[in-house]
Structure formats: C-alpha cells, structure tokens
Image 1 (cartoon, rainbow, N blue to C red):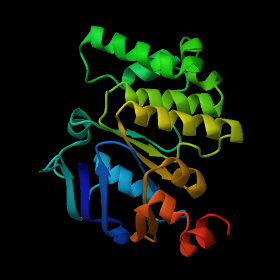
Image 2 (image 1 turned 45 degrees about the horizontal axis):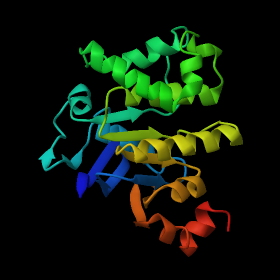
Image 3 (image 1 turned 90 degrees about the horizontal axis):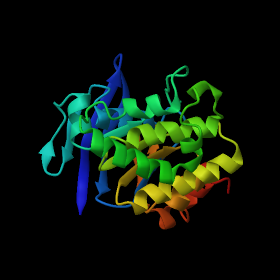
Length: 236
C-alpha cells in the first residue's frame, strides 16, 4: 500500500529548475533509494517533501491528503522526518540533548523515555556516549546521533540525505545495517545516496534522478542490471 505520493513535483532556485515534473511513491514498508550524481535534485526532493523548500508545482500526498501547504513542523507531526546531509548536530551539546531536540513536539515524558530506551538498544554505541558532546564523536557516530534524533519523533517515513557521505568503509556498512534495522521496525525509509551500489543493494525500489528529472525507476535488483545504471553509477 502506498503511504506517500509525490506527483509531478517541480522546484526552482532563483529561476533555475532543480526538479522538473518528478513523481515518486513510498510504500508503507521497505526502503526506497534515490540515486544520481551531484546536482541531480536528490536532496531537493527530500527537502520538498519535508517542507524546507517551496514547491513551484505538483502535489505531495500523504495517505490521500495533499500536504504541500503544510509547514515543516506540521509535516513532522504527520510522521515525516528528515535526517539532513551533513548531520547538522549541535557540536557543543551532549548526544542526549541532540537526540532530545528531535522530540520537541512530544510532551509525553514517559513515551519519550520508552522511545529513547529503544533507540539506545538499536544504537548501543550512542548509548555509551550519551553524556559526551557531539563534537567529540567520530563522523560515523555523529551520523548515528543524527538518525536517532530523527527517529525519536516516531516517524512513519524516515528520509536520509547522504547518510554515508564522508564515512570510513566500516561505518558505511554500519549505517547500511542500521537502515535495514529501521526498516524492519516497520518504518518506511527514503534514502538519497551517491553510493548507488550500496543504496540499491539495501533497498527494495529505486529512482534514478538526472539533472532534475526522473530517468529510471524500478525494483532495485532490476536497476542494478540496467546497462545505463551500471555504466553511469556502478562502475561497469
């Protein structure tokens, strides 16, 4: 069953088109990958869904309702959480306080504590470092904190913007494992990645964006066999 539909979305920056008539669907469960080169419009797509950038044309339909007029915090209340590129943590705040910021819309302390305990089970390394300031963590650990901050809001859809960017190979595999763990918890994941091989390997369905337009879509396993995808993104 489809949870979110983006229909014919167009976005411009200063008169320059960043997205042109892009349509994507996100099911209730599973991982959706969005791949493409730098400047393809991948991050713009996620920011548009989150309400961070203004859409020129198109619809963003969540469970049958167009949410394009809703503000970012209203979309968060509907279950859309964005983990931005570059992590965007508060470096001199503790890990715990960074995660707590993600629950600012939740005023139920018991629910928060229950959710936090669950996240500490998923991210044991973060639990160990919860009293450290974020700047003292490695890049991979900071990425885990950023993902935990998004998950504390109890999203129905978790959007990850370049979660493995700049990470060591070992941490890239760790993030991939976490994405699969989150998906197994019943949360839909939309993952924007330049590492197409990784994204398509751990996702169920994929979209290929090129210069703001949708070039290809299909089951991830089939996209990995596409001549175009192999030549352009998989090093074949």
